[in-house]
Image 1: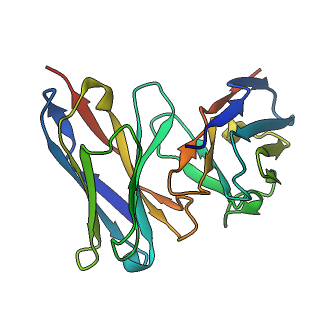
Image 2: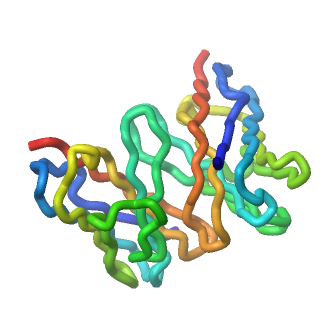
Image 3: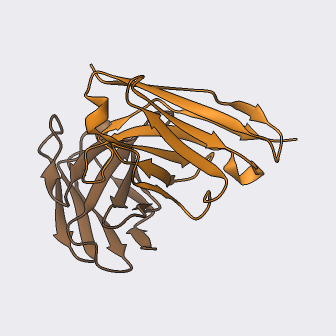
Length: 118
Length: 107
């Protein structure tokens, strides 16, 4: 069955960096755009980035542009989110997602918690 | 960026009720609208995409409609498993946006 397994979360100080990973299985990874969304504690969902199948199309929400970098490895069936210059407001559960080319998230990971605190 | 306004933010209903949730976009998004269900501590689950296409395995009591700037999610015959938070999401352009969410509570 389809699985998306995020890892790399944890506690980091403001200004610090963290790299999230998401390994996919159960579907043809190279056929899917991949996305990262997040959810701050008690808040709604926020889309933050997506990457096309061949990595040629990459987009970010304004809230993370210039600080976060999405990438993927179609051999390892994995997508990554490099997060730099982290702020307290980046504290959230981060979800990776598998996107058929249309743009809705068909597959979701279980989420990984990132806490930015001194 | 396209802003999504979802209403109501909270909805109290009883088992068997018909409930409707609305999402309004700040500009036309065509039919590029999806709806998700989320339960506490869990990842969201896709219900509907392209405004009205039911995702495989989703019960037929869920339906979506609309185009342009106004969209609705309807649950006909609310079931105990349906008490959750629902989000709309537009994917018309290169910047995707979720609505603020609607929590469906037991009346």
